[in-house]
Image (cartoon, each protein chain N blue to C red):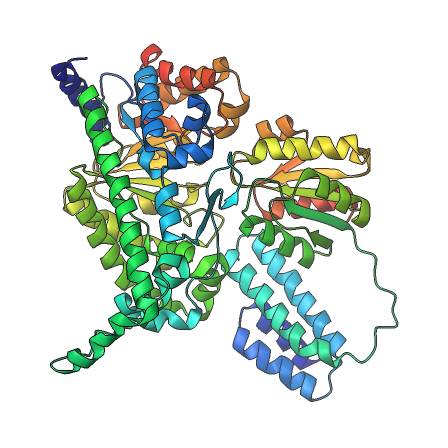
Length: 214
Length: 414
């Protein structure tokens, strides 16, 4: 890693958005490989994720890191001439959505981002998702882990119904299910038949790692 | 019940609550009743009907109060907002018939209602910003207000020509729509006042007469949205701090005026963004607590009693938020452990809560009874405790579990 590369990683990891964008642009202008620039961003995201897990960073930093990743991605991606020769690494897959009846997405979006920067291929199927759509999406995406999100108490029954639908469709044995959201606890995990519950995004990452070896 | 009996019962319940607030040992642990859409299930009507039908909502609430006999109740007219929301064309919530089904609660839509570069507009002229930008974004009835004259800066004969803007088509439409909305709003408030007076006559005090928010939550929830406010903390901290300074004054003024108008000294402050996991201690002490504390102290100085509902887990915040005068407020904790809160805050503030929603909805009456007993016997020790659900009564709670909770205060004492 040359000096500029190291500086870019540090700037992104240390939340210096303005300087990070200037340097990324400068590197690209000087002919840096856009794929390499994106790789450096990923390295910075690793650091951000770790600082979040250890309680040094909180939501403001996580959201800003996502913004920086998007902006530098916007600079680098148009410059990518051809797809990489290296075959894409197969990442463990996680499907996530907010269960039917519930329109909340802040928690779900944060979990999605944390899973993404921790090396999972995440498919976010949105809010107010009917059980049948979960089943359909599982069949198409074939995730190892499914995360059900919900903020309201009505989500208890929606989660239970969704897990039942997944069982009836014969998919339950192929995947692990974690639930999360404002009111979720061990009692609701048992009530819904999920394999685990999470109180925050770090729990979701640890659960997914445990069941995918990721 | 005779009028005298009602007045005596009211005084008895209010004394029990005030004993708790002032950290004395009441005759028994008081219990509050916060139910919103649970009332629809209890009364056998749809969520939609509860939102729209003042008479049915009032009848069901009265029935619930007579059955459960709480010491304070949450205003049911905070839920009967269907007609007035429709008249306003409320864009910040979805409610039955307007985005969600007839048996789903109304839900707030987290979006950016003020852009990042509009902090300056807000700070320079909040009323102008409301009229020109904010209100048309949050309610259809307000659309067209931006065509009104821009009052500030007009004077003398400039007024003659500029008032023509009152006749602009958008302004005419907005004013007509707002007049209609105002009629619905009057109806809502009249129903609320009549009902609460009637319940006071039966002996039941309402939990609060006014509500407000912490300045951070005001901007985070209702203006910038979650993503907006979180990036503002990093990208434009000075603007956010300046706007919160300004908004804090307005929020406090409104809360005091509304409390005075209601004749009820309690002010409800639902708290959304203070949770341990949302921001660091340093960020909390920069962007959140000092601004909210100012409002809490302002209310207390005006003889009002803040009821702060600390959502999620706020264990790490306890040391900081104890910095208020003792015996003047209620801290209602949703998921924070109340036994720990009692140790840290027990000599400062009355605690309220927090039978878990999972237990209320999926547990047995015996389990609910045991949980209430535990809270009464530990957190209730020495006074300064009001029993309630973690966030009131979850909509899906079986009625037997609600009965168990309200009977517990008569069965157990410290």
